[in-house]
Image (cartoon, rainbow, N blue to C red; front, side, top):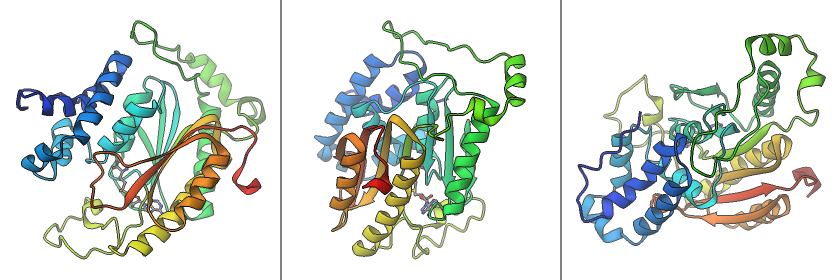
Length: 322
Ligand SMILES: C[S@@+](CC[C@H](N)C(=O)[O-])C[C@H]1O[C@@H](n2cnc3c(N)ncnc32)[C@H](O)[C@@H]1O
């Protein structure tokens, strides 16, 4: 699906390197580690490369996303973080909060196939990316959060997850066996308590790229009804408002992770920097083994957005206990 267009790239090596992030993405089903190394290198090159990017225009990543068939330039932020922290494995269950228009979900589907599950939630309607189940709703609402948990339990009862698997050493794909039709039928008739973990922790990775949608103030020439995403603003332009809104969204995502993320699972969350992010970071440090602040190269430098990447959830800590 994603063809790497190297021919359009200047042969001075720089665009080729940046494209390797995308190459790492599409190559996932075949060989992971060599490309991951290349992607890491590419992220380093991209950051030391601002003069070149300026020459190409500010929206290099937007154009590259279009070429790669990705739904938005945001994909490159997740690709960079995945290249650095190895967030995904095959067969995992991933929740993508604020998925629209869907490029993070596209990355998650690629990274977790075969047998992965990706569920996207967004307040606005959007065309679900291929291989993604989606729920439309406001994730700040406890009933929407419960709906997502119920959906995961129901889904797990119908088709028990296969264990997430590391790629083999020689880079060959490991194809886990799917349950047979008869096994699937049988699991439908089994009582829930017998098939689903009683603690409801069914998720391997929680992603949140949510940012409050604000009323449109520019771009009125784009009068599309079918793509509401292009009519929304991602920030209010007022840094305190954006910060406060993002803290609410991060805490909702973290509460969900506290309830639904497996021990050892990872959490990635966008936030707008401000006075309260330290407090969020402290909470994350208590719940996860390692916490990083990330400003991916593909995140616009003028934006106050940043990401927390929290790795390996501790088994015995919940948000309510902090
Ligand atoms: C920056 S976009 C996400 C881009 C996405 N990661 C991608 O790769 O395509 C932020 C999204 O968060 C969604 N969002 C904001 N507040 C939300 C809420 N309370 N509940 C659900 N989604 C929300 C917005 O509608 C918007 O689509």
